[in-house]
Length: 621
Ligand SMILES: *Cc1c(COP(=O)(O)O)cnc(C)c1O
Image (tube, rainbow, N blue to C red; front, side):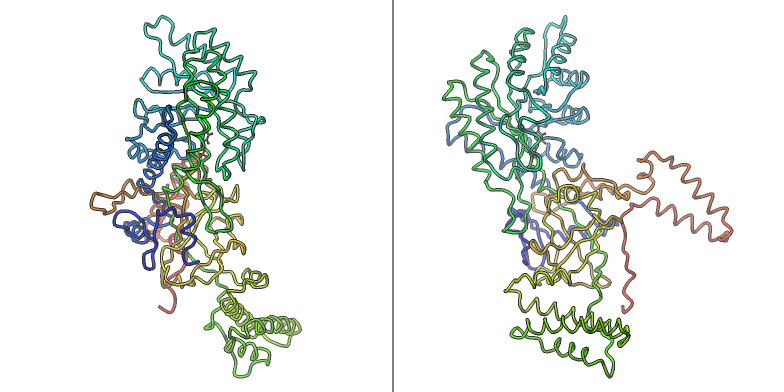
């Protein structure tokens, strides 16, 4: 697994060059080079790197694939897309997204008032805005304000109550107005076919959202009565996120398409768009036997265009414009989390740790001989002998016949023998060998918080591709589990023998070793929790100039200690005073020392809460 599954999840975004993982774009810098350049500026701890060129790639692939499908089927409707803000609202991401999407008239989707304000202020006039989710009167009023600003905004109603509010707000905004302006109206339909996966509740009959057919007919009549039928223009559904299988989407498309056609035939003349929500899946897997999706972008676009055309033809209505709101697909690949390894809890099972005596107990001597003479041919037998000897030696220790040094030698030798045997027998892959890997797994302490940076790992057991930034010429041999620096035992990505991760054996006292977590750009940032008060990591945007050189821009450092406490609504002035008072009044500190200690304290308060290092430079250096 030298490639760490790069050919499964990488989508050609990254490339291995010699022993590093590099960006497969422009001058192809390595992630290590970029990481070091940022660390040299004094930013330690985990780093979130954003790559706008990858946002652009996803957006252009989405549009180009649908344009291709439209051409192929000679489809008459237009294709549009919006980015659902809930997937990532961070300014460095959104600014980059708006910047790279100009050619596509790409818009934003909002699901709350705060998101709507982002959409109203960031979306270029004319690019679509869609507004979903539950809305109160104020939120609907904001939609009217957006429409009056000149925005191309569609407000999707999720229930009849919202429609009543729209009618009311329309009267308030447009009474005595010469040129009445209102947002376009969409209706979210409650599908008979259900959603899929972890997020199944987004679609289907028990969904939180959407109108039943009976409610749809009622909505139609209300709109007609209040002269708003000419604003009804979109049918909307969203069947759930990360759909691994395309079949439920096809079902939903048939259902939604027929609803579109039926309403149109009834007299909803302005109706002209079908919004298929999000759900396009991302391949997160590092293992061939565990892939997450079963369709390509081409298949997805072809299915949508073909099915809509078929329904329109059969029911003799015009082919609707197609909208998508895929977010995960657009955002996931753009960011990479790089985190330094702080320590290996190698149970110090190195040959140099042996404390062999002039005369050792016979079983230990035998273990040593097994260790030095193990070969492929005898590996299984020697392995079994070693395990057997270990049992005997541990019993001897319990009975007081051997000492602590002998026991330590036993542990080291058996561990080394297991490692050697696994390496020698690696092509056999038996259950026994897999089980033994658990036993020799290495725990890597990594300077990040999984709660903050990979919350979906914690909440949904979502895997994210992970690999080291360098040493890719060397075969990694340690079955690895990853520990974050929170003091929560859930903050561990355990070794999974069915989906194993192997990392290199390194001496952190002598060399740096960084792990990169990929595909972290969707959902992870805003869902991240400040568990243990670890905050959003330091982030930077990596842009390339015409010559292909990269530039580190828009650096935002992780919050410092004072700001973290301020966020929790502590009075930081009082904290400041309390700390100062305690130092000044302390009987244990001399006057000269006081100044120095205060200086240190203020320095620490101005820094972020991630760790610097935990090992002093190693003793033998
Ligand atoms: C969450 C959501 C999306 C985005 O879903 P992805 O799986 O990220 O593509 C789109 N539309 C609606 C209405 C949503 O709630």
